[in-house]
Image (cartoon, rainbow, N blue to C red; front, side, top):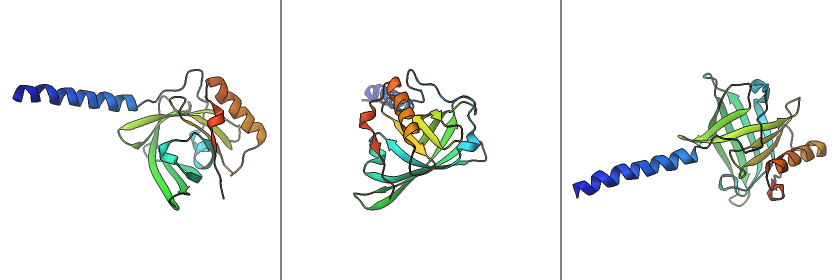
Length: 179
């Protein structure tokens, strides 16, 4: 029995470690490039989620916003809020983002459940920092953000075309209501 424990416990811990490591994907989709000469201070503040893919953490949510604050240690506090229209309640999730390389490259990793980190890549942003296209580590995560509750059609088309070129199926986007 002790021999079995000597094998099972280390193997179990190794498998658990691999699962955690694989869930910590902070990459960027093939064909995508993060914004260079990124100004993190200009990115801070409140953003409205205009569109996203459906996934469990934002299921049945509208009126979704993300607000970014600079922490004293240089990381970024992420405050996501949204209204679950099925449960009829507001939800909030607080996380932390850190730059993968340097602050002038818009490649970040974000965590809401440490030690699990995910990629957060700003791949397009207008010169006034009013509209942003965000890609996750893979083709399952995509967001279109705006400083206001609407986005101009020209920016919308620009972001959709860029996402399609990378391989995203933009027909599956959920267009978020803000009411």
